Length: 112
Length: 116
Image (cartoon, rainbow over all chains, first blue to last red; front, top):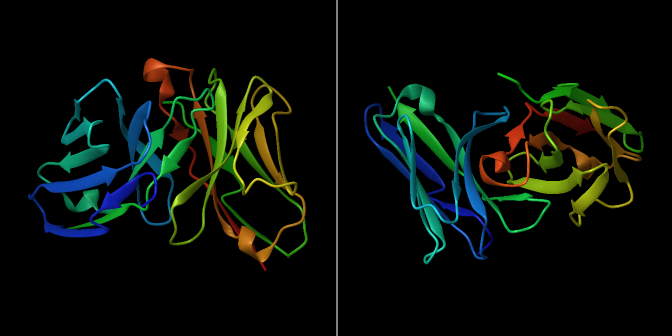
């Protein structure tokens, strides 16, 4: 598997339900970022979590990081139809360049 | 809120032609990046740029690609002789600084390049 793999690949839920997406990676990282992408559009930054952090919150979003398992999860609570998008995790290793390596993404569909 | 901007939003070109994609990173950011996303695929890193030089590049970023920061605001990606497989969405990103909260990369809306 590659650095930054999300699962599931696709997730369909009803409005109001919670959505959980997972990301696994292979190498040690400096930080992990979650992005949202609406179809054919740009990448919107959601949350950055650093390797020494375990959990972060932002509104309805909750991100966890388990460096021992090399995995992260993104939880969206009380989902809305507007949350329909693709969600990507991106990892950055300890280099000055700080490039991000993206996963394949999870496509979330929230049905009204 | 400051944003990364990119122009043009769409570009169609003939194979073998040169294209220049333009980006205006967020003011006062120090690190700049180009990524691309082929339709239906993951976002791929192309190149990072810091202190007026390339700091890292991927295998994709061959001699046909170049980047430049010609003035204090623009950051450009040039493809000298486009190929069909260069068709993709190209994203520019910038980052404030080296560590802590400055590590967040902010992406532009992208330029969709179609090579015919």
